[in-house]
Length: 226
Ligand code: ADP
Ligand code: ADP
Image 1 (cartoon, rainbow, N blue to C red):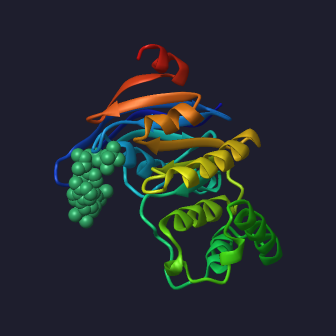
Image 2 (cartoon, rainbow, N blue to C red):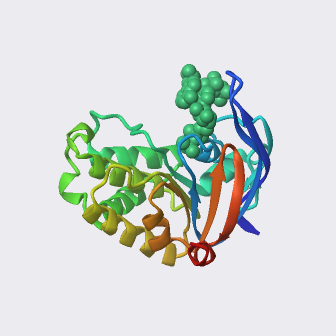
């Protein structure tokens, strides 16, 4: 069984843009996987479909064996999502944002609070727990979204450009955190346009361009070709 299985996935937006032209991708459980490609290649569309934010035109997606069409609720329970845009309530406090999310998954409040504390500490946000989110720096907001995405202890974490606009020092500390949770068994799938990031973190990659997968191989093989 794969953590993520995408078969013949196509997306045509209502304005006629063919964002995905029938891609297939299989990501093994426990993998650290990067989807690379230039702007407009179809990376966000792919992750958007996997996280149920964008409707597909055709094809099939399974998360931990659960089909997104037939078993959407189960698939969503297995998945944590860190989208590119900041989509939390900017006026809510950091701690409350993470705990509120737990409510959507039916996690009891004491458990939610314990987990929120643990993730906020690991991500260096504990001192900011009573701060309204709008007061945070961009890098802190990104880490807040990671804490929130982990609250239901998903098997698969997907992140769309997690370190865009984050300075190099903080980027490295986020890498360390992602490596730690990957070592604990969470499958990580991210998009990035920093090749350096994929090189530092990822075991396997796919390169997407104009809605097609051009390359799908171990990171090591890609580096050997360069
Ligand atoms: P869907 O086919 O998933 O319903 P739509 O085609 O209706 O999506 O577009 C969703 C939203 O994204 C619309 O508000 C649209 O204006 C906006 N949008 C249109 N073109 C682009 C683009 N190139 N990049 C990002 N967003 C866009
Ligand atoms: P990437 O994440 O690799 O930059 P996207 O998945 O955002 O690529 O975009 C793939 C293609 O789909 C681009 O041509 C983009 O302009 C188009 N696109 C993305 N979102 C929308 C939308 N909501 N409506 C119409 N076109 C879109």
